[in-house]
Image (cartoon, helix red, strand yellow):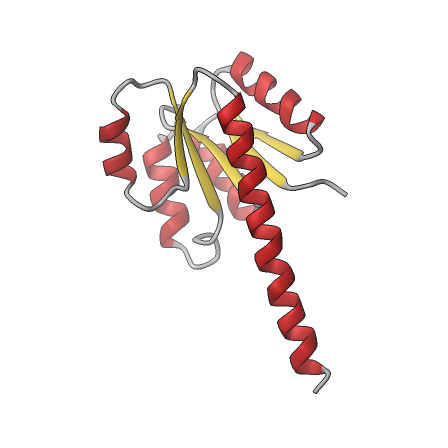
Amino acid sequence: MPLGWILVDEDNIDNLELVRFLLEKAGHQVYCAYDGLQGLDMARQLHPDLVLLDITLPAIDGWHVVKTLKAAPATQAIKVVALTAHAYLAIVAKRLARAVMSIFQNRSISPILSAISSSISRLKLALQGFSWGLHHRSSQ
């Protein structure tokens, strides 16, 4: 069983393949999208544990993907980590506000992998507590 289900939405094929390889090597199930529209459709269908989202994507950009995911009750709980090559992270962070968990520049994969591992672990703990609560209530 995979550690987590992750959707990577990245239009740079080299970056996407590197991230995919590292995530799969770490035990995650990885789905790939190559533009914003495809990523949005896949997130709606798959409900991944986490979306790694490039901000500058073709079709529709990452801003629109995040805004659309967070506006819909069916997808608003999906965790999003934004990836960007832009140097103006303060502007990116302000524009995304609280819609994403983290923002990283595409310079080093190590902090991204740490954030993914931490996010998946927190999600699994939350889900375990939720399922224990359901089991506990139904056995009373």
